[in-house]
Image (cartoon, rainbow over all chains, first blue to last red; front, top):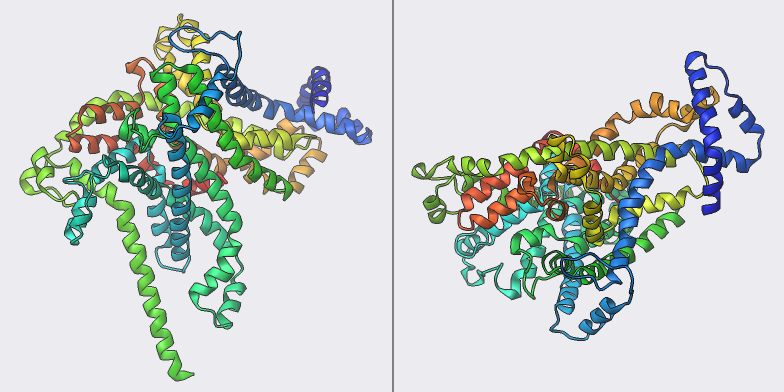
Length: 343
Length: 293
């Protein structure tokens, strides 16, 4: 990959000059480009090179920015995690070791350590949030797809929370969950379920569940949109065929429709799982940098370790773990997309 | 058969009624937090302690004072957010369009490899770049680089935030534009190419004008994302006078713990730009959301 890149870079100066020159000519009178005419006769590899060079001004600058800010920063983060940088000084890139990671491995064996607790909560959030959001999204999509009136209005309302900042929704839900006068407990009392009222955000048993419920509220509209696209791609004849076979609605969805939504499920699940890994804003606004053992997750712990306790190397280590978890989710997905030629 | 059809249409009606019933209940579920928030924002302290959250304010408990208090606290934040979110949105949309064109309508070896890096970039957790990002911006000291233009130097934090958001927005914008450029008519581009038009000219004269609807989608979706973000602002902006609205709102929540009416008014003020955009351009926003997969 790289030698082709450099070969092309070596040629780029000359070709770019003729390119810009011939561009001028054509703007004036549409004179055929000699370089282009020659290109047709040239061997296929130089055609590839030339198209590569001509495409470079378009994707080059964005790729440079992404390379620097995204991948460069990820690599730098791994490097920092190998130092022992902490406190207010500068990192010293001299003695690299894996002490941060061996500490994490040790912590994983200790169920009372912060890292163990945060990892457990992250996985619980990831699984529970993804599953219930997908289920609610599927239900909404099926309902909206029944050819109902005001379909667009329903869709717009269900997707609306996605347009709000987590800072905003965390404030709304702190109010909803208020133990004495919040809407959740008020509603429970009104319908005679007063026994089920809770201090949702301070009782360790319900804290994480309350967060997951609120996040489900915010994201199920997204899952609905993805499933709707999947549903609309299923040919109408299949519904009719199932109907004439006398299948009940439930059976039809279970046997005919849901299996065909597999790719919608996969892609929505990838997005939701990756979101769960980086969920930060919502928890931070609701609980601050220290949500306590029942709700602490890796992304909040990373921020706390690095930016509050100035344990930079350790914070970077947690960040690397989060990156690897995200990679574990997206790499198989991207590979499959690539295999099916959908990339 | 005919005796059957009566009960059949009856069951169909029952089914439709229950479908609408569930849909309406779900509307209540999705709007309840906003509705209670809006009602609470118009209530006095006494009124929201004594009334049901979703009930409208009682006659003696109506006030707009929470809105004034919240606006007072959030006003500068709204201005700051606009200052960096608008340019950052436009930059990432433009770069996204260019990158998508260079990797979709032009063909070169290994482009799948580079493209995968762009697509994967959509999913990378911000956490995995936060520490290097703060290192980077303390080494590239925007404030002293721009010291000769004091108005810009004072806004250094916002410039850093804008550049960072622009860079991190490129992957999703590229993915959105690529989906659209794949559907462009290849024959038309090929014809232009045979006429001797260079890729740059084809982009300027054909692709860019055709991209308007996709620019609408990308700008709307990306503006919402950037406006709503808290994490980057939290680690990059140290000067409180440069704090964007999400930071200001979080601070307001922390300092007015019991004043739910002011908190709610503040939440609506911070959400207003994205809410207005969503109500006006919901269709484009939905396309942006769906494009993420």
